[in-house]
Image (cartoon, rainbow, N blue to C red; front, side, top):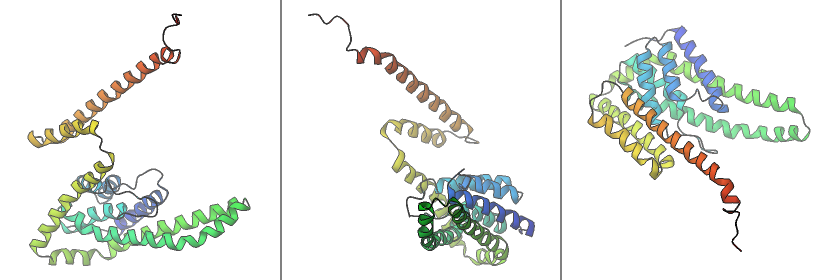
Length: 267
């Protein structure tokens, strides 16, 4: 078990503010758990933990994306708290995913509340747009983004620094069966997240690639996932060049198709 210092807490707060802005604007997608967990592990001085937690959490959140007014559990708080809980309590990253969900859901509801409150600014923004008042529009956007990002910072600082003793005591007081249950649930979440993603993206023509990716790590003993990644790159290259050749073939055939074939009409 480790203790998070004030300097580390401030660094994590800054990380939450930056990624919170990115999540609000959906600009660079550095808010994804894979990146957030990795940076959190780097700040805490345990990069391997950040990478492992990032891979698991990213899979769990793979199929959870905002759509319209809906808001899934927050990926930033899930990423930060999964690593923080594993770091401070010594629990397995899979167990930490389950323990981090309340923080993720808390931030989810805060963002939903902001959606409701910020609606009062829409009238002012519409009025400014009619009057071509770009300065007011910029001020509104900066103000709302600042409120959201600072909220990320405050919640993160309170969660990782002020509440770390209480969190450690809570985990220590949990019975073994509950910890084991959270570990199982955390281990299932990546599979559920990936299944949700496949439900939207999977097409019949991609099923062979999925089967190959499943068979290789399942029935072949591997010390790491690099061979699977290399196979994936090879299959992607095969598909890319095949589609490229088909596109070039269609392009070459296009003139003869549009001209109706042979010039001799045979009257």
